[in-house]
Length: 200
Image (tube, rainbow, N blue to C red; front, top):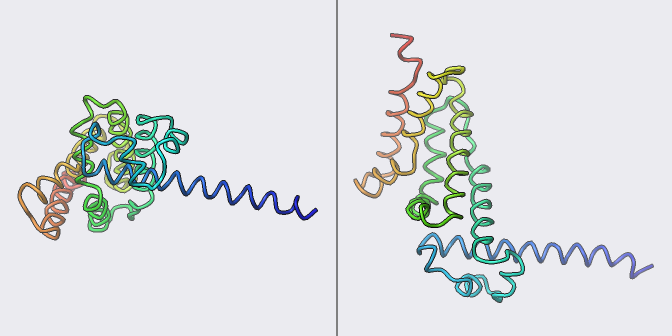
């Protein structure tokens, strides 16, 4: 009886340990790919960073492309959790977006630069665009037209005004402070509010 009672506990502990190892490998890969080109990071590099064997990485993910898909899904799911902002509050929306970009923006730009030659990154980029569009539809639900070409036009404007490359332009290329860059994005979002035209 005692052995039977302890078996589920041991299985649960093993599953938890396997999941912890899986997350550690993904964190290691994400860290390396945030600094280096995809092709320059080997499974050996990831294994050493995570403190596991290469075989462990292969067993968990099947290879480099499988690992990349898992990492990008994992990063996307974390972004979904952290990007919580009240609908219509432009200041809060921009603050939440900048918190994400300040943490992940440089990696996002590096990954995006490789999407034409790395299928895993191309898939991740398509997923990220869809996720960002859904986020825009949610946080700007109060101002977007209901449907049709006007809605698409408004979404395109909001997409451009909140794109990571605009963050890069302001923060990296032009050297704006975070406060000044956030102000610029707030002003831009306010200026493209479709409701302004109806009020005029």
